[in-house]
Length: 369
Image (cartoon, rainbow, N blue to C red; front, side):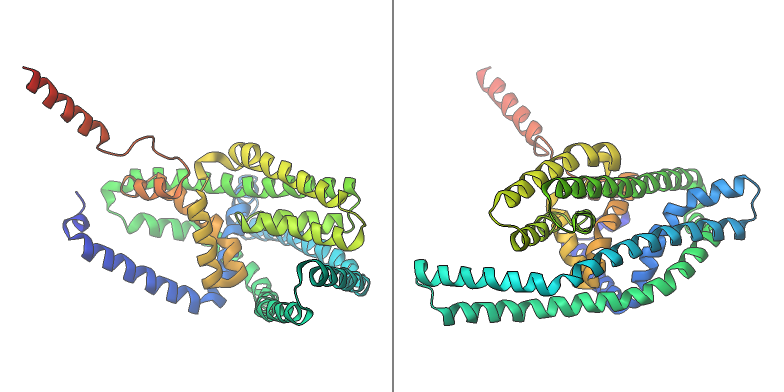
């Protein structure tokens, strides 16, 4: 039995809670350093197989890391350039979209006044309150965009150094454990490394497939800016439940402003429901792997906590991080209960239920004798 379990539960719970509070405080105050480092860590994990392959071909270590990093930067820059050009086309149409949205809003307000007896002054008050609540979100988004410049500067530096000092970091992990546990540590590290790489590659492939399906559906329905909305929907899909709702809301809003009737909106809802069903029942289990699937309760809590600590970046980073933690927990005996807590496998019975039923059966038999 571990020594920590010998202490009373209230003392253990207090120590754990205090540790979580201190950790959250440190994460919030060091976000400017840790956010780009976190993105660099994931990028280094994705690029590590390419670096190993180049080094196996007798390419020098520094040159291998540099070539892999250039390839990664080109891909990321290509995606950003594509999204930026699509966003520029979208912003060119903003005056027309704003005009149509104003017309629809005026018709909606007239309907509410006429059919539901909601005074115009009350509606304007609600609109003002909604606008006031949206402004902080816009400011947070602008802050995230400004922070992206810092991330773009530090990302290649962090990634290069993580790949260059990979052996040093791994040896450090070996040395902090006892020598007799070296074989077990090596096994856990090897399993975690392979699982994390497959998990990250799986997330990337899943995002590409979802973006393609979203774009195809919107193109067939004739929704403007289908490519931009499809890619944004795939990015938002990383956020459980919240992201899915936002991914549907954006094309619905564009379709409502740009098209007459409601046929397109119904088609969007049906298409996105089918895509979400395909993603949840086929893409995630077979591409991302069901062994890293996180249950809905933990997913929502982690996304909200990530948003509270690191803003929008934290919301996107929280799910991959919790997936990595589950991979580690599942491969260490002392932490397996935490891995089960994060997972989506629900036990079929409570612990001790069988022992209770057996004890009752014994009592009945003794009474019958």
